[in-house]
Length: 147
Image 1 (cartoon, one colour):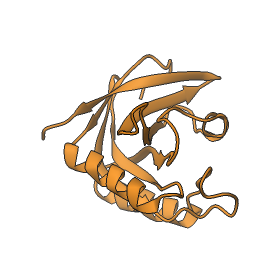
Image 2 (spheres, one colour; image 1 turned 60 degrees about the horizontal axis):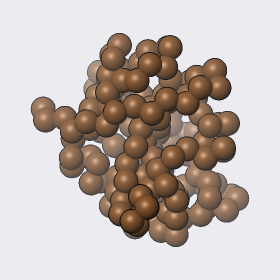
Image 3 (cartoon, helix red, strand yellow; image 1 turned 180 degrees about the horizontal axis):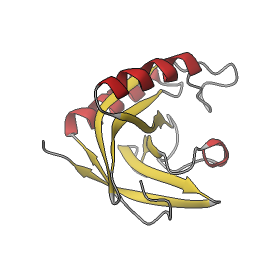
Image 4 (cartoon, one colour; image 1 turned 90 degrees about the horizontal axis):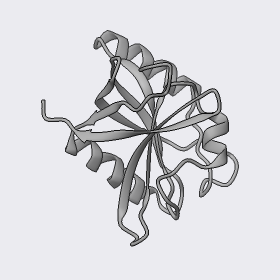
């Protein structure tokens, strides 16, 4: 992904989008979370696989998520064997919008893709992509990818 935080395109198959939204709904009222495996390019991030993981937070799971570092290491190795890499994280905001919270911004890794599943003003599921770098927040375009 680009380092200057210009908007990029996040390519996501409809089946992977549905997988995230289904996991988010199933975890309610807690936040759901997982990793995004794919390929980074200059102007895009192509998500090849979405992996749901247990929310390991010990504090308010309705408002926070935490991914086990051992799960991250295992999936990073698996991704490399498939010619992919961990390019980001997905998580849900069960009762909120798909916009990053202050905690999301504070804990974000620079230039990673963060997909947030939330609800729009009408209560309908919404999925939006974000990146963070040097105190800048950039919303990226999520586009359906047809392989």
